[in-house]
Image (cartoon, rainbow, N blue to C red; front, side, top):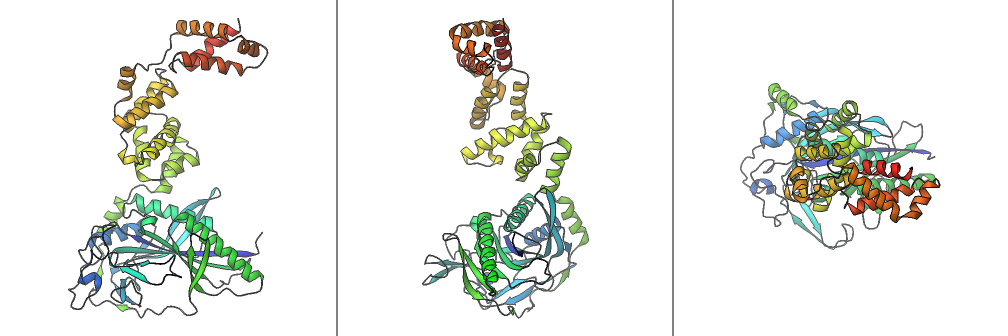
Amino acid sequence: MSEFETIIGLEVHVELLTKTKLFCSCSTAFGAEPNTQVCPICLGLPGEIIPVLNRKALEYAIKAALALNCDITDVIDFDRKNYFYADLPKGYQRSQFFNPMGTNGYVEIEVGGSTKRIGIKQLHLEEDAGKLLHTGDDIITSPFSLVDFNRAGVPLIEIVTEPDIRSAEEARLFLQELRNILRYIAISDCKLEEGSMRADANVSLRPLGSNKFGNKTELKNMNSFRSVFNGIEYEVKRQSKILREGGEVLPETRHWDEDKGVTKGMRSKFASADYRCFPDANFLPYELSTDWIEKLKDSLPELPLARRRRLMDEYGLPAYDAEVLTSSRELADYYDATLRFSPAPKVVSNWVMGEILRLLKAAEIEITECKITPENLAELLRLIEKGEISGKIAKEVLEEMSTTGEKAESIVQRKGLAQISDEDTLRKLAIEVIAANPRSVEDYRSGKKKAIGFLVGQIMRKTKGKANPQLVNKVLEEELNK
């Protein structure tokens, strides 16, 4: 058991899903040619016109703060956070430094079968910086860098947690839950690989039982949940080794090298950053309407954790099923819609988690693009329940449904896939198979009951999978026990 306690706080930047930037009308579309989505406002050129706040970005920030259980500020204003960096064109960043949008919130995660609450210190709205493109292997060894200002001015929310996280696994679970929540309320696509969700981790260790925080390091360049987990794990081991050997952990910003699986020092953090913040005179403070906030609160959907609990409480689903089905709002909506046509929660869960997700993965599409409607899936399940088709045939029918969108019953009729449930026909086949396989018959009668499985398989082969499996077993047992 480790003699140290791990203390982790996260700073998460999330780009909002607006069509234009926070203070100008430049496009936010991802993947455009470098420096083609810029203007005097987002570049901070001399003589820029007065910027205008994007109302949709403000709405999204309020919805995020509400979904994260934050207290909402009464007054909106912006400040100038002054610092120099190569990808910051104006030399300052407009942000809510003194008066954040939301404070004192929380996110609940499931850890080891219990619920843990991770505090949200604050959530604030700000503009993004540009993006540096390094020409070397990484930021440390790059001989020079290029800058793309397309991202400068894109609306961001920054979510700062309390130091409540105690392991790399908890950090991963928190980020996954946070991404789910933000996707559910449709304010961001949260694509880590495109940089629309980025997380920095502040990691420190302290002796078990101590209340004093140790020196922390800030980890950057983690663009996947796997990177976050591995980066924190490595940093915990690195700091543990230093402390066990009597050394001191230096407060610094460190870069996570995904290829080499190590963190590398970038710059020291012995002094707190002095951003020389002051209110932005271009934005006069104004009060938020309480009626508007209430309307936004009422517009929020059922959030992931509440939905998981409902699926478990109302339908008796296992925790694993509930977690998979609520991994996206669209998938959860699909499941709920199917249940309106089929009163079998666990059966529907099995087919959605199994065959539906398999087909989506193979076709590389989302559930919203699936041609199998909830009503048609429920119809397929009814055909199985009534014994008109077998489970094996149902999978074949589902494959065709996924490519054509045709109803299950019409496919079964058109292709002659209806299940053979005539007992006389199946008994005749059973007699033929028994006569043709004396070894299996002998094994069965000598006590090897599993031998009947081979005989069932022979009948299924003769009927091309159309025979009713339960009835096949019944007539075989009757004939074998004569």
